[in-house]
Image (tube, rainbow, N blue to C red):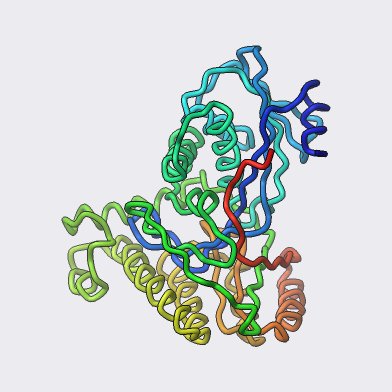
Length: 373
């Protein structure tokens, strides 16, 4: 296997195990995984693979196919911040409590900075490989919580648990209805091809960095709403009851929480629409999600708003930003015959606005993380 050969070139010996894990697209349910909400992501075909071997040196060495000239070497595991990609790998080792020296070679094929969760793919491929290599016996739910802890406490990103969960638990042909409170899941068939539809992923190539505080500030607003309303989580209040208690919250706290409670309802409404084969309704719910993320939660940006607008003007049933926001990708649900026109219009309008030229991807729902050798 070529991947094992690359490990050998980097470290001069054979790998003991190889595993892979996918990125994800979240169909709907954004910024509610940390509020105990329901989300509806699916794993995509783009994956990150890791090859791992014990080195007997008492240190950790990381190398990457994307940066072959660089080897990150650590004598101990302490929280790493900044831009070092190896912090995601180190965080998983730390969260699993592994102290034995390791060599790890990474090949990341999930587009970085596109809002497709390249970091979770790296964390989950590492976790699955180490779980197998050391016989730890952790369940997929265990690994989801462990990799979330790695990103929260080691890397410093206060993310929810959605990205890691779908990277580990995704199934081909289905979106994953994930209850972020107890990590129970239900596969929801997402067979758009048989309806003549395609889901276009548009990477704006505006790269975001979630450690800068924007993500944390919004999560804190949701937690403040919970505390001031005296409830367990925003999962536990209906939209109408939340609206009735508006006067108890300051305007910023209210509107951030309003996004959360309405987005949770949109997720369940989307499941109903998918089960009924009502893709027009699905499109309307995607549009409502984007409006809420842009205007209420204010995590969009001009590039994302333009992409969504142009997609809808050129035949999409619906479109919205995906991921943490402040850049990254949008998705558009459209008839197959409209995809080319949507792409062309987006390229023209982004160029006219002086924005970066976007990249386009498509992917059907794919399988989650697995050991492959």
